[in-house]
Image (cartoon, rainbow, N blue to C red; front, side, top):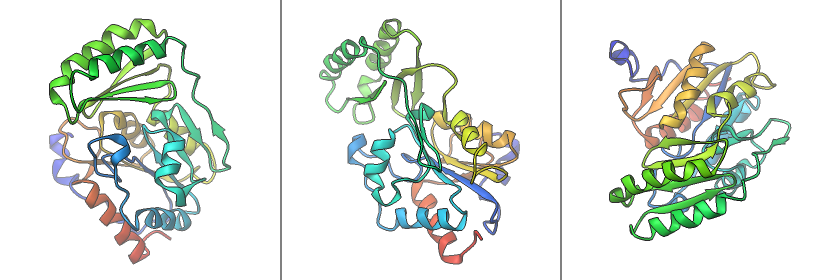
Length: 258
C-alpha cells in the first residue's frame, strides 16, 4: 500500500451507496484461514448477510475466489446460484446461472500430483490440493516445506505446457496461463447486467487479488485490502476477516445500500 495514501486507506468510504457492484474474495477475506482448505468455518449469519447485500444491490454481488465453483456452493449452500468466479477467474457463473468452464486438466497433471504428494509426505502438515486443472501446494502448517514445494513447482512446470506459477499466502499454484485472473473475472461481470454501470467494490487479501484491485481502480471503484500488506494496490483496508464480516453485517442492519 502506498505510504502517501496510508492515512486515507484505513477505513472504507461511506457505505450509504446503492450503485455498488460488490465482489468478495473468500479465504482470508470472508473466512479465516484454517489448517487445511477443507477445514474452514463459515460463521453463522455470514451467508445471510451476503444474500441481503445481493437483494439490496439488485443481484450485483459476486464471490471471486481461488476455490472452485462447486466448492463455493458447498461452503455457501444458501448462495447457490449467486454469481461467482472460481479458480482465480478460470471459471465463472454469471447472473443468468450460465457457467463458463475452466479448461480440462492435461494428462501429465496426474504425474505431477503424484510427485507433489511424494514430496509433501516428507513434511507433516504440507497439503497437495487438486482443483480441476489447478494444483495448489500449501505449507501454512509446514513452513519448513516452503522451499521444497516451490522448487518442485518450478521443476514440474515444463511438464505442463501453457501453465504458469501463481504465488499466494503460504501456497504456490500451478494453473493454466492465459489472461484469466480475478481482474478479468471482475471485468467480465462489469460488462453484464446487473453489474454493468455500477461502481465496483472488491475486497481481497492475497497477492492473487492484486489484479482485481487494479481492475477496480481503473474503473473508479473501491479496492479494499483485508490485512496490512505494504505492497498492495488497494486504496482502502479492513484489518481482518472478522472486520469484513462485522462490516457486512453492520451495513445490512443499517440498511446502507439501497
